[in-house]
Length: 99
Image (tube, rainbow, N blue to C red):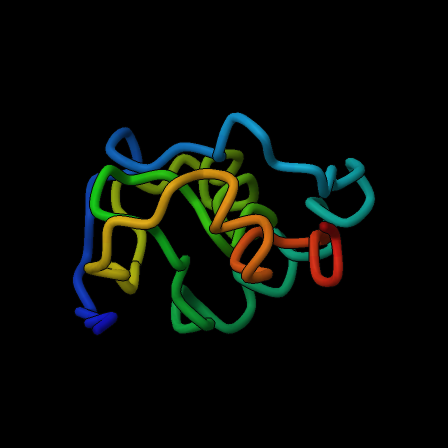
């Protein structure tokens, strides 16, 4: 069973997953920074595993980091899922359908 918990974490406790395939360009990050500055931090949360590895929301993480935010909203997926299973299950951004 996979549990999900909404929390606010220090940004230093969250990090892009080492095998993350999706790479955001500066234009995407800058565009999101402008949106966050105008609407605030209330966007969809970053999805992380219990270790703080980002499963979805790398762009939000990069924008928050660029804006100097100390904390970010996260949803913690409480299951222990091996890295290869995460990719196969499509948890990592940009990896849907990758086998």
